[in-house]
Length: 258
Length: 251
Image (cartoon, each protein chain N blue to C red):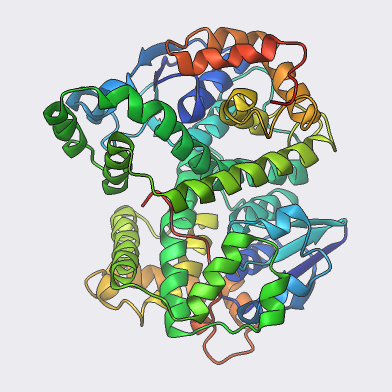
């Protein structure tokens, strides 16, 4: 069996997806933590592994894999352990539909708000010249733009309003979907749930007016059930920041409307 | 299993799904709709959430036993799984990863650029009543922008660059092979579907790339694509465009 090394940041968003998928499958891996707030992902030693400087990346034997959702499908197919994709082709389609919807439409809106309230303030106190140099090392032009905006707090009002509109709509859609079945995309736990938990684990903290036990009981049931899984507990215990600590809200038996 | 495919002209996402359907010999009831006039929004299933909010933009809809499915690459994966004959994704998990990653690049970077350039050259049409029916606020905003002819130079340049980058990736990928993933796959169909119409619009992207041009001809001549193209109702289906996915909001 080839060894697995995962280069990741916090159990959150893209990094958390392959972390949790590997742990659900029971695959042992070498964890290589990259501090996103210290720009570890743009340093030469990591760019030698992933020249695009995006996190996460997984090295399996001599194979290097990037793109968190595609990595998850690979992890599910290549390793033994409980299947994380349903067997029925239509269920599989639904898993993929939801993952794309979250990856490309909903998560960027969550992360724009997250970068404004967490990432931007976390790095802004640093030496401006150090920050400038760090931004110039970023290989992808669109990531340079995003980082500049986060550092200078320059997300426009229109952009943020549009992100908030999408977050509100996304929450309604998740709630309606989770009212239909136990898990997001099928009757069994799947990659869509892993993906969704990474997006939504702190929802009642981040969006208390939109997500709580009164307004979104199905989302809360779903988040608590995933949080109770041993793999999720072990995965979130690998977190190092206050951002990830927010998961503890799911330990409360009832979260009232904020 | 009862399948109905609502599709537009064989170009873009409709071409991917039609060609996959034919390659996998999946029997389905084919219904032509005019995506360039927003025909999808009059379907009975138009307001179902996974149709209304599909981020592909104006793509086909496959109704399978009452469930309306959208997003062409994932419909193609579904057809690959239920159909017969040669698989349209590699068997090896690593090469499957490569295929999904390739298609994601196409969906996220190439498709928005191609749809923008295609719609500028061959504008889709809509009236106020049709726009009213669109369930997604952001899709309606893209329609309005295109109908108003609002294309910035920056957007156009960026889109042409993205077509050039796609052709560059294809040219490099074809160094040692005929098809993008080794064997004929969904990656060939999806890439061809978005790029065939770009040859006249961004000729510089293809001029110095002989392997890419030869590959375009090979895909066009492949039986499943040829059969899909034979369904065209217009003389040049690659000139038929409707509103596509949005350009990544982060840049």
